[in-house]
Image (cartoon, rainbow, N blue to C red; front, side, top):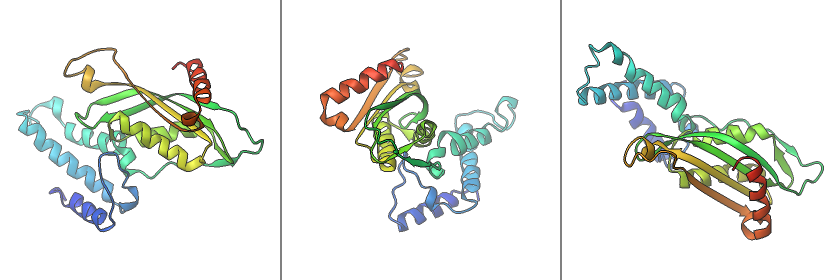
Length: 226
């Protein structure tokens, strides 16, 4: 259907389950088979209407042929995929050697979308951990970051959401997550200030409570290019 009824059906389902559906919420477990195809078709239909409202002749301009469909697919399947896809499968392992020192991962390439202007946020993330009983493979941090960041975001919330996701999985003694990113809502529009980036961080456990542990973490992160 191309009248918004798919979204209305999904929203009703979400409300019945008491679920939030803000821009950076994941709603995968409330979607049914075929919903994403219908959502994508609805988005393409309304994007076509939006382009026409911008007085762009999408019916006769060959440059705009199928643009609405391409953008709809990009949004649903890529840029906002973290809203609609279930979390990546993450295998954890016992901390067999009882590692109680810091290990760090980064830089991890991140891509998100500014919730205010729907323009790209591009940057890098770094993670530091002092584990407890469970650890995960290094590549899994990248998978989790890609899943969490593939949504409309403000960076201040994105770094917290990524930290929450990692902490829930491995319950570490200490966790530090740092994101440094450039926002095209600042570089492409508005002040158009090139080269400006934003840094946000979340410190949990020993990294929050111990200045010495935090200083050691940032010394290690500088070795990874932070």
